[in-house]
Structures are given as structure tokens and as C-alpha cells.
Image 1 (cartoon, rainbow, N blue to C red):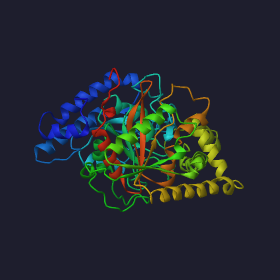
Image 2 (cartoon, rainbow, N blue to C red):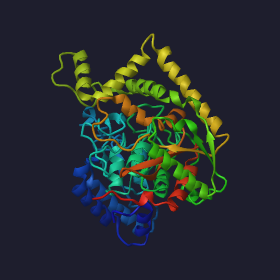
Image 3 (cartoon, rainbow, N blue to C red):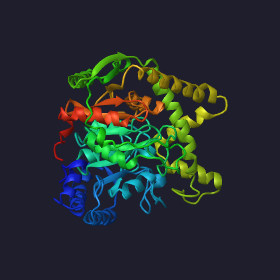
Image 4 (spheres, one colour):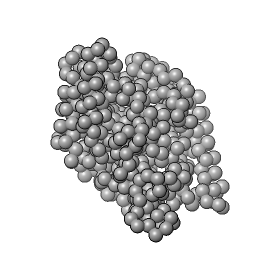
Length: 483
């Protein structure tokens, strides 16, 4: 059962080949057996899962149907779940039990999805390796000595190891697409505002976006269908109709215009990954696509702009964690100032403290115009580059990451080296565009992903291209040894 995709589970449940309760018990046992190797879960919710599975079986017995009804999933541990620890991978929130469900959690529960647990992540979603978590690093199931990517590394590792068919993630600068690429999954960052951020603990509010991680584009379409939609509780949610993503999967790619930016093929890209990217281009050409070289001239400024804007927003968002209302509080504070300083100093990890300091500096008097304002201007230039490109092409294709997964600890002493792994993904967040990573091959036994970008609200187009590619390749079907 653990090899079934979401789509296959939906068919199996509809045909009464097994029940949701049976499937849930199988996967919970598998997690208990295998997750100690991976550390992909922070919390397991066995009682909730079995209750939801029984309820889903009862709904099916009463004639209800639905692709997610009875399907087991997990949530990245920054989606608030009522009465369950929501830690954000941090000591700061180790004792926090959310008093309500995030909109994404509530929508998927209403659709009948079964929550198996909360997955490990970089602390407050800050990281590209899932090594900054208070609960320890997550291991890549393709090689347990390598990182799975971050910050949604727990969700990615769990799905890649076949502990469950799909999971939610969030993407602030590539945190769905990058771990998807490094673990041989399909991961989708929707258009900013497509999925509600209400109840999703914020890192950088103008960049964060929730989305699905699964083995196939078809499964991502099913999960996104349950997640997407307008939410009046979220001021950044966009009131735009949600199309039937599964219905558009089988569209022809004949005449599809694919743009390949020349800036993607710089000295920083592993040449073996470049070869796999071009091989995927050739595969899509066989399906009728037309390929054209394009230019994104301001891409070179993306990393510095992102690492001013994101920390600036983080320093503001994380100011609420002060030891007063909720979360970690230091022992025996002498006064209010001591409470603030020690609670934050002891509750936040090194990477979070680093980004708070960078952000506070960039927003401080005398530096706001020099750094933050200038970064926002670069952000507009990057968006304009994409708008110009999408006048010429329908999607943009390139590598998801410049390198395959690196060894655990290899970049810990050089945070900038880790930041550079986001070079191809952060532009979509700065512009608010939808992006998808799909499996495209292996380098030294480690997975490689290809990234697709599309105009606003064209998630269906990305899923269609990825699904057609997956019908004609088998990279996404490969399973890591031992899992």
C-alpha cells in the first residue's frame, strides 16, 4: 500500500479494495519503523489519524466520494493544528499548541484528508538543508549522509521514503521546490495569494506561500485542489476562481512555447545538471513544444535582494516571540528587558538570530533607503523581466538547484554557500509567480529536478506540462533503496 500515489489511493478506496483505516494503520506502522533513520516527523497524530480515517470510511459508506476523502497526508509543522503542537521547528514554540486550525488544515480536513502528523522543518522555515531545526537534521532517503533540502525537508523526506503519499509544505524562496528536487519529488509553489496563509506561522509575509509535495504532478493537482481558494481571513488571499486542476492534466503540449533563460547556465551550475535540463527540454520538444532562448537580465541581483527583503520581514514577524504571551520563556527573569533578551536568545537558533539581525539592520534608520528600499526596486525589475519573457513564451524552464544534495554539515560554516543554492528558486517568490519542480534524472545517485515557471494563476499549465513529461519518463517512479 505504501507505494500507492494519491490518485491510486482514491481509486482503491472508491473500489473498496481497502479502507482508509487499514491504509492509515499500515502507514503509521511504517513511520514508526523507518522514520528514526530520517527524522522527518516532529509529531505523530495517531489518535487523530485513526479518528479521521474511520470518519472518512463512514462518509464513503454513505455515498460520498472525493479524491482526498480518506487519503493520508502530513502537514509541515508551521501550519497551526488545533490542540496539537505547532513548533515551527523551534525551541521557541516547542510547548505551543495552536488554539485553531490553519485554513489549509481546515480545508483539507473538510475534504476528508487524514493527518498522520507534523513534519520536521528548518527553524521558522529559515534554511535550505533542514539542518537548523531544534529537533535535529532531516536525512535524505536517497543517501542518509546528505541533506533533503529545506525548509520543507521533513515533508519531502517522508514522501520520498514512501512513509505517506503527499504532504503540505511552504515556499518562501524555494522551500517546496528545492527539497522536491533533492528528493525526487514533484513540488509546487502556487501564485502568491492562491493558497491562504491564515494560520501559517509567518517567516516573510510577502514571500510565503503554501503548496503540495507529492511524487507526481497528478497528486499535486489533487492536493492543490483541496488547499487553494479565497479566504476572507487572509488579507493577501486573492478572490480568484479555482479551476479543476486534474481536468487540465491531459492537454496537448503541441505548440507550447518554452523559454530557457541563458542566465541559468552560468559557472555556478553543475554541468551534469545542465545536461539533464537540456535532456528534459528535448523530451518536451518530442511532445510538440517549441523552445526559445530568453533572458532574465536582473536575475543576478536576486540573491542580494532576497536576503535583504526576507530577513527584514522576518525581523518584524518574529518580534512577537518575546516570552510574554506564548512560546518559550526564560527562567527567573530579573525584569522585562531580561525576559525579552534571554527568552529570544535562548529560544531562537543561530540561523534565525542571524536573519533577525540582518533584517533589523536593513530596516534601521539610515539604512532603510540604502538596503530595503533598493531591494524592493530590484524586486520590481525582476518581476518586469518575467512579464516581458511571458510575452514571448508560455513557460520558463531551467534547473531547480545548481547542485545535487550536499553532505550534512558541509555548508554549516558558510551560510552564504547555502543561500546560493536558492539562486534559481527565489525569483519566483520575489515576483509572486507559480513554480514547479519535477524529477529529471540523477547525478551520483542523487536526484535532480527541473523547474517550470508560469504566469500568474497558471498552476494548471505547470501541472499539465509536468504530467505529460511524467507520462513519457520514469524518473518520478524511482524509489530510494531501503524504503
